[in-house]
Length: 105
View 1: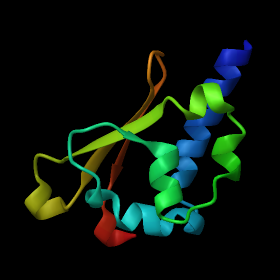
View 2 (view 1 turned 90 degrees about the vertical axis):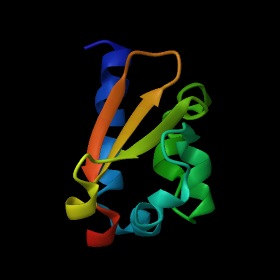
View 3 (view 1 turned 180 degrees about the vertical axis):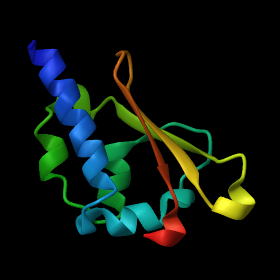
């Protein structure tokens, strides 16, 4: 496995953990405070919500500075309250997609 493939796998695991670990609960609950459909820096958003930055910092400035997310409401948002959250590294091919309901943390 190449270094980049390993980093992609670790990024995917980190993104998954954002939706499981209690340290990121406030960030998850407040996702809709970010503008819908616009790209936002993940590290800036996590920091704004007092989430720990140690894990994300392990990816290095080259990745962290380009790691962004956006969200849109699901087509059935009125019933499901689900958001589709997309993560990517600007200028790269890696991406991750999560479905999440902030009201059901």
